[in-house]
Image (tube, rainbow, N blue to C red; front, top):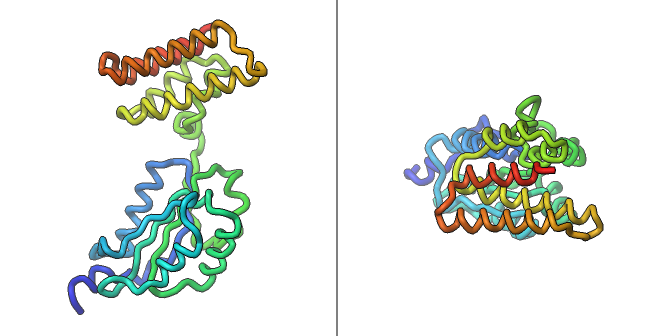
Length: 234
């Protein structure tokens, strides 16, 4: 057995596929790494790794990849992200395939949904399911859109605490900025599209902060705090 074949072999103690339902992105990424390490103890072959996205790939493409003999033996490691966005007919075809999967692939399906969104999948291959939902206080402070609930209830302290709990780097600025602009647009839509002077001023304020952040003259965390204070004003 050559080195590449050995490195591509799948552990017999791992299932041939997993369905991961998650809200917690960090926990999902950690679980993917754990499953890959368990499935390929000596490391997987990069030539046998594929990533598909549910809103782009079809069942035909995914199954074709599964049925293609892998490079230097072993198995493919196939990751399907945004699996919840697969078309209904593609899900049906894939679930039918998973009843008797081929020998060439180890698959991980990632469904980014909440508990309610996962109910329709609850009966699908229960032994193969991994659920990574938020619980307790973690649900309050890890859920991205929990910050909008805090703003609606005018709970400034909670909104700031959620930001403190989640903000890590500049990528989080863009994530929260998108949430805040969505929140403000949604507020305007509830008024049947009638934008008040205050709302117009808030939009200007948000984009002024965004501009300063992009220019490097304002720290992202401080910018988001300023937005929270602005949205919380009466």
